[in-house]
Image (cartoon, rainbow, N blue to C red; front, side, top):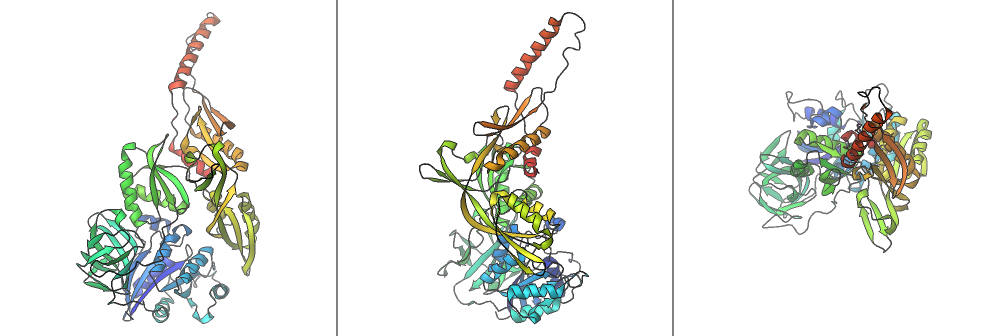
Length: 591
């Protein structure tokens, strides 16, 4: 055990985690030259296309007689749950900071998470070979953040491979060996799981205490289910089977599990004969922040969609879903995501990995609604709102947002945050020209397009991170969209009263552009309760019924026009308006 080192790589987006992992794998000859490619651990096409890591990836390397278990983690704020699980399975963390950009918001939040778990931090400056690198200045920032000595900070270039051997040496020297007793009762922490259509569900775990052998009877503590360990092994680039895995090591188990609900990430595995006394603590369910309805385009695909979401949930434990139905869209699921990027990725994966065509409704957050008889209802979507007359007050979730940027962009960022009903808590200089702004903001305001706007007004130089900060009473109203007097529940939103009229007007204008014209007028109305606040009309497509009527008396023309009018009226009564998928998506991009 004293020769094992478990560590993860944490950093902000695009600071070079996956590239550094590539160099480590090359240097330790874990991956041979033929298998080597850029970002070799990012095995989804989606990850390679976008250049982001979505899943944590575990792999074992051998270096100078030591066994190094590396877990490469995502950098985006939406996947922080992945990072928290990886950190729980490690004793050390390599903190990568881009020498051209300095410390960013996500670096700080991931670092705090690692410090909470008492991990040994190894600070690394990456991209030191670039012309615009500022190693001294960034080192000052790291020293201020970590309180470490200057000589403890390592410099490297993940692209060229310079300085990577020193990082591996530092991991061997500084990261403590895992604690644990190979002879104690078995205790393993499940930190990830994947679905394999031939072998069933494969769980990845770290052995905290005890030793697991092939063929052992094991129990998953939280679900209480028992299985035989048909195959256990360690994670190289592919899985490589072993006879036993003992305390401190990271591995996988295949035991023919068929149903996805039987494996929970964060669960504890133990022996049936000699169980451990208690489960491993410190794992919580992921808290979704953004909710959206996901509906199959063809209603008979409902069961397939359920199966696809279950398989996806295995691989992405932060996705939650429950069935719901909508008048306009039929049966579907209410899904909870950690953020907008997470929602986009889940949609893409449903399409690519499971061939599911889905419609997604407007994302929103969950509100606490207090009724006049003192009950509290949690409302995830506008359709679940109690009647206006019964509501005493509505409380919405607030977040504490931290924006790190250079002083040049302070003005536009302040304007953006204040326009989203933010309140400035404090602003302070971190170092040189860089500032940190802290805001209290409603989560509902940042759900749709806040991050994109922040990136564009700061030319990509502002980094953003946030955490929940309780609920506050708020003046919210439910905005309904009516088409010919019929309410379209998929387009309803909860919004602040001050923004409602403007938002309703823009929504009507947008729908007017997108709805195809019919043989009758379509009235598009935005309403709060019974009060209409905006209206647009999609004009009918008209046929010239007077073309064949030349000359003669005006009463002949009148007669034809009256006949057409009656037909239109009948058509309007039985005609229904199809809302195209584009319209649901356009609401997200109203600005």
